[in-house]
Image 1: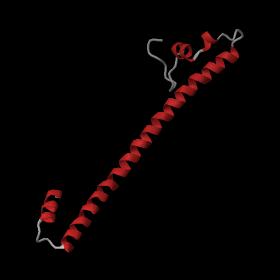
Image 2 (image 1 turned 30 degrees about the horizontal axis):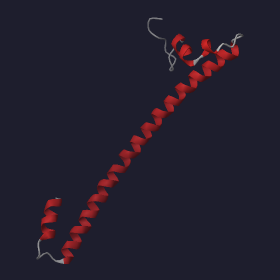
Image 3 (image 1 turned 135 degrees about the horizontal axis):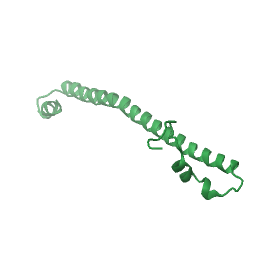
Image 4 (image 1 turned 90 degrees about the vertical axis):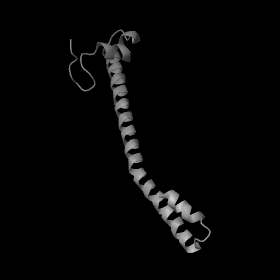
Length: 102
């Protein structure tokens, strides 16, 4: 479509009115494509935010478990209560399902 418009645009006998109509058509087509792109960009941003929220929830769960361990522990040894050991020794996943083989 653009090559046809460009071909007509470059012809010397094309009137200025016709060139103006072609220019408006090009702008309208570009704006239509951009309007189609906006919802897709919004969906991508929304999905990225959702993934970030889940990552924050998992991180907060590990930190809360670490804090709970420290509060319940009499020794207050950090090595026993760090997030990595708590997650490794946990019998459930983030969603509360039992791990297989445990």
